[in-house]
Image (cartoon, rainbow, N blue to C red; front, side, top):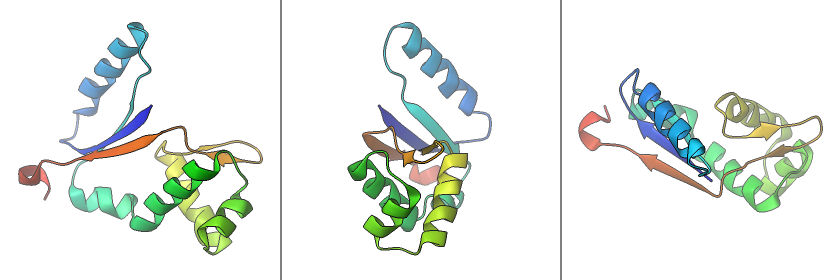
Length: 116
């Protein structure tokens, strides 16, 4: 499964949801879709540090927040804040003791004409 992140006009999320439902009815594992209204918003939410955390977490598999911070070489409280936001965005799953990312890939789609 992959995460598809795009810059799209408000309301276009409904078309993506219909596509996901259709895929799941056909037995395909639906991709996770996340839309932002502008490139500025996308990159303020998915910062390089957060994308690095996703990559590190993917490599580790389900792990504790402490182990993730140590593996990433970052301060625990900063990792905790970034993971909390990634959980809100649906990019990371958090259980009682562990966090994990369910995606094998992240694709970012952005039409340059609409990126502003």
